[in-house]
Structure formats: C-alpha cells, structure tokens
Image (tube, rainbow over all chains, first blue to last red; front, side, top):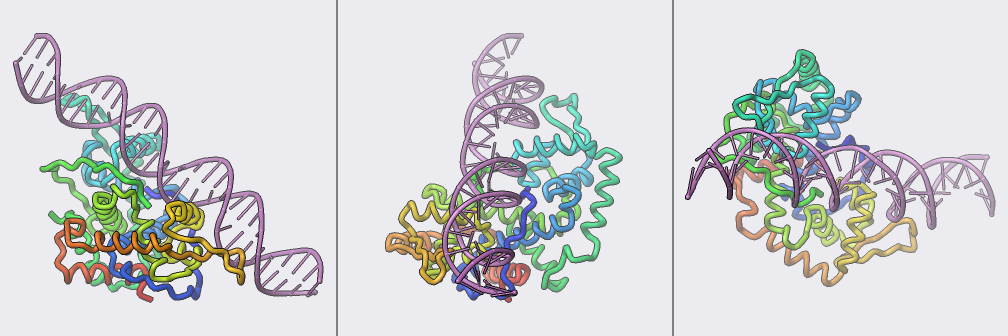
Amino acid sequence: MTPPTEKTPRLASSQRVDLGELNTTLGFLLRVAQVRIFDSFYERFGDDGLRPGEFSTLLLIDCNPGIRQGLLAQTLWIKPAHMTKMIRRLEDQALITREIPDDDRRSVKLDLTEAGRAYVADQRLRHSGANDYHRHDLTPTEERELARLLRKFTGLDR
Amino acid sequence: MTPPTEKTPRLASSQRVDLGELNTTLGFLLRVAQVRIFDSFYERFGDDGLRPGEFSTLLLIDCNPGIRQGLLAQTLWIKPAHMTKMIRRLEDQALITREIPDDDRRSVKLDLTEAGRAYVADQRLRHSGANDYHRHDLTPTEERELARLLRKFTGLDR
DNA sequence: GCAAGAAACTTTACGTGGAAACTTTTTAGA
DNA sequence: TCTAAAAAGTTTCCACGTAAAGTTTCTTGC
C-alpha cells in the first residue's frame, strides 16, 4: 500500500523537540507507528517486491477461498479501484485465479493457485519467524494488549 | 498526508470473513486504525482543506518557534522533499514565515505568523472539542494506554 | 586558505492509490 | 416483461508523497 521507502535520516542524537499535544494524539501516534512497521516490512520483504497490501490480500484469500473481490476490499479497507489493479498483478504472477461465477456474473471470486499457496506458506514463515522484523520495546503482553486495543478502536472486534 | 478520501462502502451486515492471523498482526491493525482515524479527521477538517500533516506541522512550529525545517521533518517522519512543498503551501496561506538564518544559510527556520497562531488556536479547539471526531469504543483509560503503547512501540518515549 | 566532501534544502520526474465516470449484470417496480 | 435503478467491477485521470539528482552553503583535512 505504501511505496517502498527510503529511510528518513534519523539523527543519532536528535535535538529535543517538544511534541506538545501530539504526544497524546492518536492520529499522530498511529501514523508514526505505521511508518515504522511498514519500513520494517520492506526491510524484510522488499527484495521479493512483496508489499503489505499484497501480503494481507494473499493471506485473506488463503483463509477464505473463493472470497468475492468486493468483500476482500471492504475487509482490508482497500478501495475497489486499487484492488482491481492489485488482483491483476497477483494474477499475472500466477499466484491467484479470478473466476466469474455463473450465479452473479458481475462479481469475481478469488482463489490461490498451487503456487500461490506455496508462496503464502513460505512468506508466512518469514513473517512470523523470530528476527528483527518484530523488534520493538514492547513486552509480549504489551504487544497483545496493543493488538486488542487496536481491534477495539477500529471496531474489528465487533 | 493522505488525500481526502471517499468512504469505502461498508455493508450494514457484512458477511463474515475469517481474518486469520491478521487479527493479531500489528501492521494490519495499525493500517486499519489509521485509515479510520484519518477518515474521521477529514470528516471534521476536510471543509477547511486542512490535512493531518499540516495540522501537526503547525502544532509543532507553535510549540517550537524557530524550529529548523529538517528537524521538523525528522520529528514528524515526513520526507524533506514533501516538507518543502507543505511549508510552501503554508507560507502561501500566510500561516508561517520562513527565515534563512545568518549562522547557517543552508537551513530554514520556521515560525507562525500572527494569523497562523490564531488559526492554530482555533483548530486546536475543534480538534480537542468533544464531539464525534473522537468517537470509538475505548474507555478513557484504554485510550491513554493505547497512546502509551504506541509511544513505546515507536520509540517516541525515549 | 583551498579543494573535497558533507549538510540542508529544492527541483524534477515518477509510482501508488484514489475519485469519478463507465460497463455489464442483476434486481425491483409498474 | 420491460424499463429504471442498483450492484460489482473496471477504466481514466489526477493528487500526494517519494527517490534521485541538483544547488547552495558549511566543514574538514591538507
């Protein structure tokens, strides 16, 4: 979703800046957190050309075979116009198949190919493997709590 | 930072999708949270044409008068090339002033104009005002804890 | 004190994701 | 059943933010 990004230069001993209320502004904190985790993602997966949106798309098709393209887009909060392009890329790489079902010929059903399943299995290992992709200062408990709060904040838990 | 965005259509009773491991994937959760909060931001501030990045930039200049442009960019994780354009826009609106200091004529020092200070004061009220911009299911305690965890996750607390 | 390199932006050109309009298929209403 | 409206994707065009290269000003080593 975000282009592979060059690191923003970060001074070893950056002058002190008063963040003021940004320190407690969720919008700001969420953005910084996302920049950080996306950078980590590209550090690990950038070589493959795999992007966060593609990764989550593949994972979701894997968990929900035959899912309709629109529902996929809604779930991942990806705009339909963008989803169309992403799906085409994945199809070009022969990772997924598109099928127009007879019961509704407007829609598109998606499935992983054999190669797609293998690819997902492989990337999944790299993603959850223990290395510095997940490096941060949170304890495992805090990490789970952060995930819980985010699910509640987003409404994903409902 | 993100363009004003049309709402992704969200079905009232969306079919159930198995999120699988995305349910505990910080990258995914952070992205969804950010989409959500940016949408809220535009709902409230979109009319003014004020964007999240501009808002935080103005806040930071307000708290750190005379801050250098590069340090501002580092702090907000905004790329220098983009910061240049944003600063120009804000200068065109006469909200800030750019000054080339004599002790280092490569750099740029930033300050709010009188109009800028008034504008920030005004928007700050709207931003922290109690209305549905901050609507979510978190309790106040949970919201503070979320902010704390995000600061720790990002390293902003160090 | 002069050249070589670094630092702090700025400019240009581009890629990604989005809004709006379009196509095709399905549903609803008369 | 025939037309109007809605639904699901797709296409086109555009804006935002980035990378890479360029400019000017400092700094450093000789």
